[in-house]
Image 1: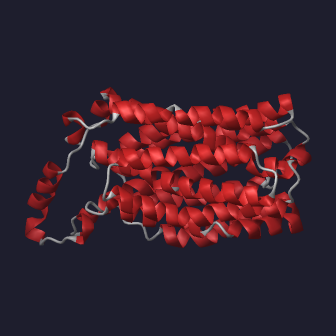
Image 2 (image 1 turned 30 degrees about the horizontal axis):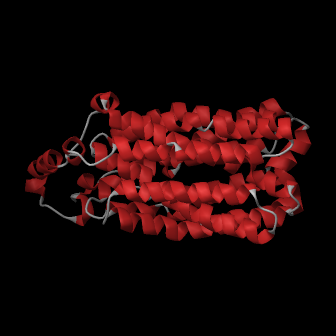
Image 3 (image 1 turned 60 degrees about the vertical axis):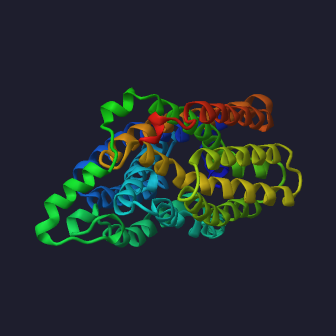
Length: 384
């Protein structure tokens, strides 16, 4: 929703402004492996709290940007903090360490925060209309510090540090060393070196990357597109609020399904839902079309948020999950560079986003045959 106000303020093209979102993807791509490495080796609380502080300060400074170049720098400062504090890598690994039998459900519940905060998008839109984008982001940056730091201080890295096994199982002090050794031996786990050599690693990058290209472009241009076809800022923002709200049951449902069925089936269903939502978006003409898009897109996006780290944990184990998932997420995030710039270029060239929506649908579709062929059931995959 800040896209058009910032565009008008700096008087630049959509492609130029979209570069900020693409730079964020490049930066996050570099940082994700570092975040994973740090999560594996130091206290996760330190990583997450530091990220919250940097993101809050960066967001506040963004509102003081005198030009597009300063905006790029402060935007990247803010997003670098988000890379350390968000559920992308850090929270995924922490939750995976604390749960085993019901990891899918636990991860889904942990990821409900974004969905719960979805309705706040409408309040942000009203804040934007009342105070402008500069004052709004400064207020949001300060609010982020006051709200998120106390919660970040509650983080606990791993259960073994507090006398627990995953899922809350306990052991006595005299049993600690032997119990931890038994747990590590019983838990399948790859090293980052072995993971990089496997086709599973690179196939995950391909299928997650296909999704990220589409999602990155839509998230960057969704509000602008809705306003272009005649809807108000509040109406456009309401679609995001709806999408975030329905993503909550999506996140919960996927966790339950992953604890009970093959992840390949669930993942293909998510991709199909995302393709359908893109077709609706390309043909939207009434507000009810926007609502239908928001429900389908939001529910499937909600399912996608936790499934990626859960899949990674199942395939590679949790002992080196931070480093492995960080490396995968970093590579996937790089693909997000394409989406925002491609949609911006499409609009600047054709004065419409619609051709890009169809192309993105095709990109999403390419992930389905990869899931069906590379991850089909076999003995090599079953042992992970």
